[in-house]
Image (cartoon, rainbow, N blue to C red; front, top):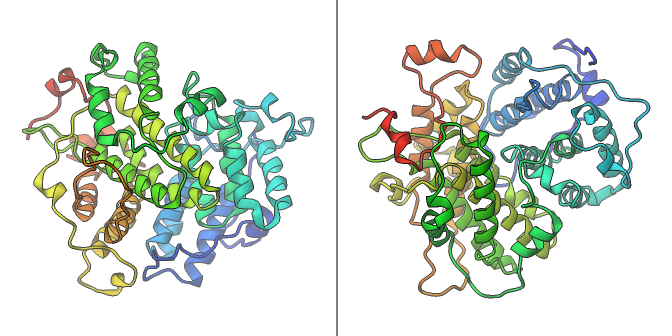
Length: 465
């Protein structure tokens, strides 16, 4: 491994990494984002790029440093908070591997080197060259590589993390971060047997203009499917190949019934449907009489969905439908792995959000989103701020809903109070990723929940209110 360390006053790292950060996305401008915070965010992302590996341990757990940095930067974090976040993360990272001089990755041979983390620096070098060569079309080139049949099954693995990293690179217009996303995808092992193979992807995308089934209807069919009903309880479901194999079969079977016509209006409407279902899968899982539950893996269905519009903008409409359905398939897989849980939509969740975070409203001191943003910036959980950004996107979209023609029996999700879900997130997830978790539990701090919560067995040991 290569040992790298840079002083906090060393801005030469920006040029070494060729790190750039574009402007915050239109409609997401907030107080606190200025030249100074952008300069520091760029420097710290450059240090992460130069100094750290994509996995912080040998179990394939992902480096979240630039995710955390960019999310708080986009919500207006001050310079000191950016540095604090970097310092918290750097102690748990592994140093990056050195470039292997005898490995020359090309567009023709990249499949020979995938799923081996030693090749991470070489993949970065390769993809940097490819993005530079693409000129103004570098974002489309990046997405095309991500969806290459040799890469796609890997990129959709790891609980969405390569897709999330790709989203950050595109959102902040950073070729360097985008190159790390593609490299991250390539060094992954596949989480699936065949769900994102060329043939299965084609099977999940039949030529059809029919409205098909809604996601709410599909979830209900999965719950009743004999394959789902027969799944036995396992407290660690991903450790059981029978569970994961069955979940993949269910996801593959039912994704094809969610029709996504290749038109802009249909894509926009279907994305809003998917985001809303991901939000319900995040915030409506607590059985009555039990303490509020926020599930770690299913949370990633929501945080990854934030980036889909950014990726969609870089693709022709036909490929937009393909990536949207691929994300849907991965969501259905995660849902099935965890026992196909019922939703318990409380009045608080389904009350119309009266604090819509539309562009320009954030200057209003009475806008309650600003308090949520401040709390998420201060949180030392590395996922909370990403959840908040995803819920804010939902609030923005609910101000301008898009409807696609569908039959009267097409069941759409109910209205969602996005601000309520954001508030319960910052109020509930109070544990610190950078302290001993057992000690924090003794102190009454709360973390994300894991487990197969669709089974009654799970709830026998889950705390009551």
